[in-house]
Length: 142
Image (cartoon, rainbow, N blue to C red):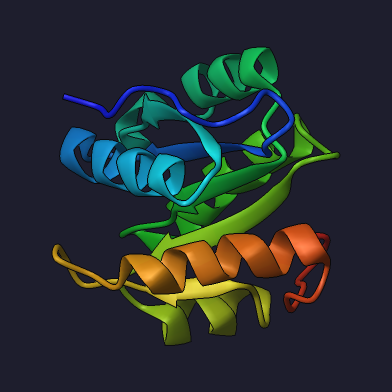
C-alpha cells in the first residue's frame, strides 16, 4: 500500500513508467517520501506508445522515469513517440544496458538497473539533476 500523499501541490510531479507494477510502485513510494508527487503507469513494450502517451498527456509530469528495455531499438522507438508527445517533460531513462542505449542514442541521464533492489537514492539524484537542468542530454532527452 502506498504511503499517504504528504507532499504539497507545488512539489514536482514525477511519472514512473515501467513494465513492472512492483517497480513503478517502489519508485513512486520512494519519490513521495523524498517530497515529490508521483504517479505510475505500467507500460509493457508490447502495448506500444499509445497507452503511455494517453497517461502522460493527462498527468503532465515535470519528469518521467521511463524504462527502455530489450529489444533496445524497438523500445527506444516507442520512447521517442512517447517523448514527442510531451515536449515540456524532462526524462530519466532506466535500462539494463546503459552502454547499448548510449551507443544507440548518445549520452543521457540513464540509470543502469539490473533488478530490485536498486539504489533509490541514485534514482532521486537523477530526478533532481533533470529538474535542476544539470543532466546530460541526447536529442532533447534529459
